[in-house]
Amino acid sequence: MPSKAATARSRGPAKPQALSFGAIVLVPFPFTSQAASKQRPAVIVSSRAYNVERPDLIMMAVTSHLRPTPALGEVWLRHWQAAGLLKPSAVKPVFATLEQGLVIRRLGALAAEDQDALRLAIGQIIG
Image 1 (cartoon, rainbow, N blue to C red):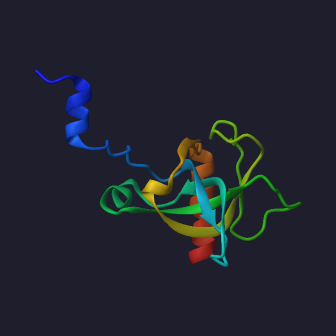
Image 2: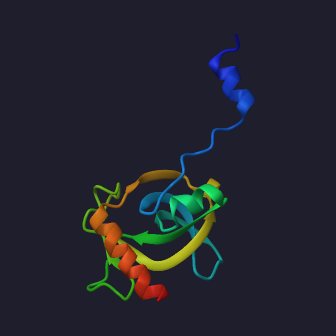
Image 3: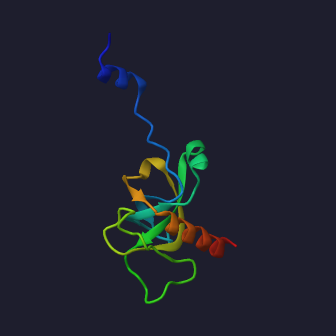
């Protein structure tokens, strides 16, 4: 009988668990100019169903640079520590689509209250 290690090697790399709306991940988030990217947290805004079927993820940038008042489409996270973030943070109204393989690691997930606020903000942005 083959060992567990040999069996795992024969199956190929394990597929990561599908991410859902509200998951916080660390990624090389592209600048809007597309000239470069910056490693930063991002929140997944595509659905689990989309993420299972597609090779990419739709996400929004997360920043710890808070403005005096939130800008249109910006969401200040009330439960930032529970989401796995190190500092008080906000979701920026900036979207990107990245290949799932570019996710460096999962940090956590938004609390339900923050997910609801994010859904409202996306409605403001996209209309």
